[in-house]
Image 1 (tube, rainbow, N blue to C red):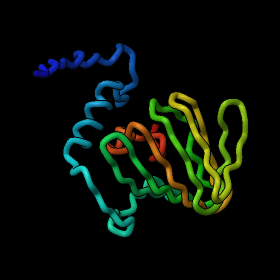
Image 2 (tube, rainbow, N blue to C red; image 1 turned 90 degrees about the vertical axis):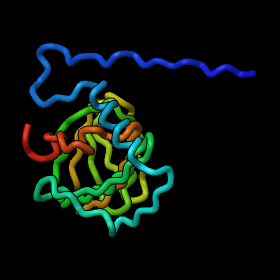
Image 3 (cartoon, helix red, strand yellow; image 1 turned 30 degrees about the horizontal axis):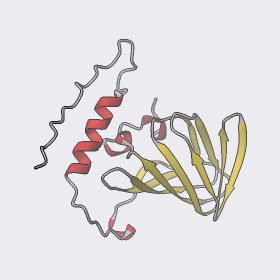
Image 4 (tube, rainbow, N blue to C red; image 1 turned 90 degrees about the horizontal axis):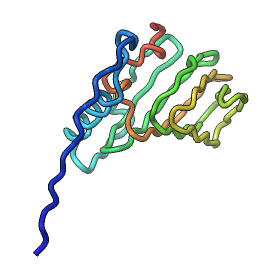
Length: 159
């Protein structure tokens, strides 16, 4: 007879003193993602046309779908749109459907064109500029809690 193993979770860590106001602790972000993921059913069929476009600034819009441990975002950038330098604990895959994005990452400049993919490791600072009107798909693991709870101020022109 198999015994069920008792599992416990570690207590959530408290934010460190001196953190910027509005910054989310890693454990709080994990709880936000877990809460959101737990509310979803295992199977989702979601046409993009059913997801409202979120206007982040005059040159940037997005839509996203969140699974249990992954997020897919459709990002629309007008030519000249700048995504300010930032980093996150999420691994990111960026696939350009149409257009081109210039990235400043890891001491290099990389232009990613339609049909190409950029794999961005967790915690790696990066910045991007739309060289033309661009449609990009971004995949994140785990899902971006700051996008879900709309605390992504760096994209909204507020810091």
